[in-house]
Amino acid sequence: MTLTIKRNGAAKTLTVTRAKITTDTVNGELDATNKTVGIISISTFSDPTAKQFESTVKKLRKQGAKRFVLDLRGNPGGMMDRALQIRRCS
Image (cartoon, rainbow, N blue to C red; front, side, top):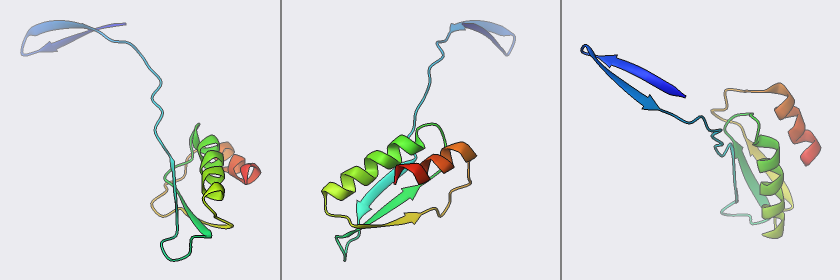
């Protein structure tokens, strides 16, 4: 796709390529004082969230987590169907 940008009367044409950008929406770590507790933070519910959640749970279980705390502070929400997929992952 090409875009033409006009600035101060001068036109400049740029060629751009669309790409799907995936960002991490899930982060996890073991609790500092109790290594059997995994703490999982979910920043938003979007396309990659369920898969990232599942892989984070598996990783933390391998490290010794038996229980989990979900940290949703600062999470503005997102796609309801993606949020519901989390339930099926655990």
